Image (cartoon, rainbow, N blue to C red; front, side, top):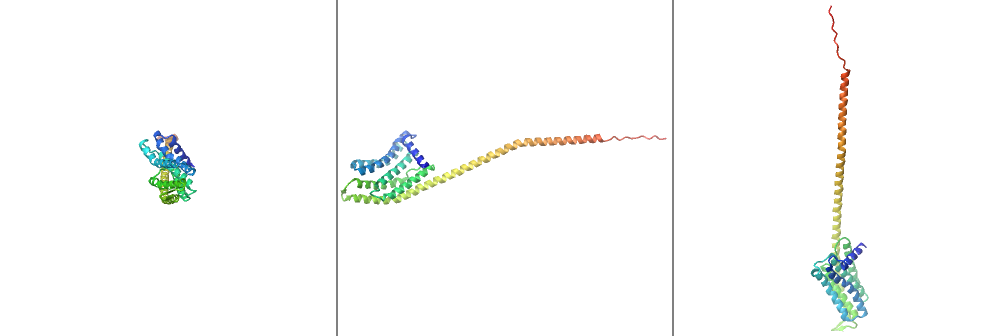
Length: 275
C-alpha cells in the first residue's frame, strides 16, 4: 500500500508539479502511452477507421523514443519522477493492451502475469527508497511485445484480411510467436529488477546498522560524560570530608597532649637539715 501511495504521489508530481517545468513535455509524452493503451482496444473493437488506428499506434511507438530525447534536449535533465513515469507508463500500456487482446489470444495472459511481476518488484523497489526505471532489456523486450499486440489488434480490426497471402490467421500466428519469444526476456528482466531490489534492501540494512552503531556510540559518549560529571560533583565533597577528618584527628591529638600536660605533677625536692 505504501508503494502504491508513493508511486501515485511521484506520478502526480511528474505530471503536474515537476521541479523543472520543462520536464512536463517528456513526462506527458510518457503518459500518452497510458492514454493510447486505453484507446487502442476501444478503436479495434468498435471498428474505428484504420488510418486513425495506424496513426495512434505510430505516435505511441515514437513517443517511447521522444520522451527520453526531449528530457535530455529540452528539459536538460532526466529526473527521478520522469524515469519512474516512463517505466510505469510502459507497464500500464502493456498490461492494458494484454487485457484487451485476451479474448482472441489467451496466450498473452502469461505475458500479463510477467509484466505484473515486474510492476510489483518495481513498486517494492520504489517503497524501499530505490529509483525504478526502464533498463536496456526492458526497452528491448517492449518492442516484440508491442509488435505482437499490435498485430493481434490489426487481425481483430481488419475483417477478411488477404493481402499477398497475409491473412488474419497469419497475423495471429506471428503475434503468438512474438508473445512466446518475449517471455524469456520478461523472465530475465524480472531477475534484473529483483537483483536491484535485493541490493537496495541490503543497502538499507547496512545504513540502518551504521545508524544503530552511531546511536550506540552517542549513548556511550553521553554516558561517559554523565559519569565524568558525577565524579566531578562527588570528588570535592570527598576531599572536603577528608580534610575535615584530618582536622578532627589533629584537634583530638592536641586535646590529648594538653590533657597529659595538665595531669603531670611537678616534682618537689625536700632539703634535709644536718644537725
